[in-house]
Image 1 (tube, rainbow, N blue to C red):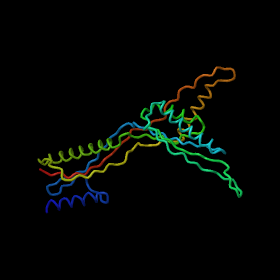
Image 2 (tube, one colour):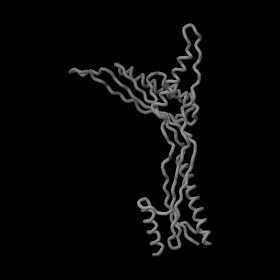
Image 3 (cartoon, rainbow, N blue to C red):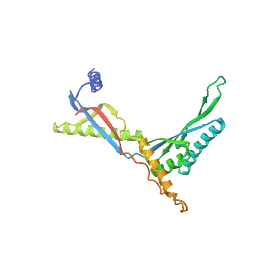
Image 4 (cartoon, rainbow, N blue to C red):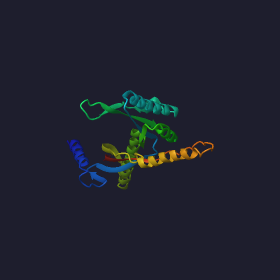
Length: 255
């Protein structure tokens, strides 16, 4: 009965920690309750590029063919830059007719839209992927986000760091009393969201694309001048390190 009462007390104690301010350390009978924080930092190793395809024309077949060709081109650019098939996700193309007034309601034009997402692990390929994909005038760059390919591993590292801190804090407290840390009776883990997983601002990317077009234009030279190749563009800006934080609340037996 004593063990059951202790477990129920600890459950109520941990469940109410968000509504009341509790200290990080509590002594309850022969049990020490310790709360500690941990974190894990890493550089992003995965970039996600999203492109949208938009084509509009009076002829449905021609419009659909333009959009399909643009989607295939992005896939070809991705393959050329070493991306695997599983790193390229193509959405379905949607068709929307636009009607003109009158009783017959004849379609005036057709709009075909689609989306394609690329998973990039070599960040040096981001610049060529963006430039080569949007040069047809049909494809539009939508977003670029950085993240961790294995978020679960990062959460485990943060949880392990929090547990090490909890054990270390409990050990230091009990050593002052001539006691030792016993078995773990209860643990409550809270892994917080990743900090640093962000989207690159579209305005920044627009400036980047404008710079690429300006470089290509200036490299063309004037009348009668030899056309020079455009200088290579630097990759888009990278975010800061990604941080995963965790909080653990442990109940240790006191020996």
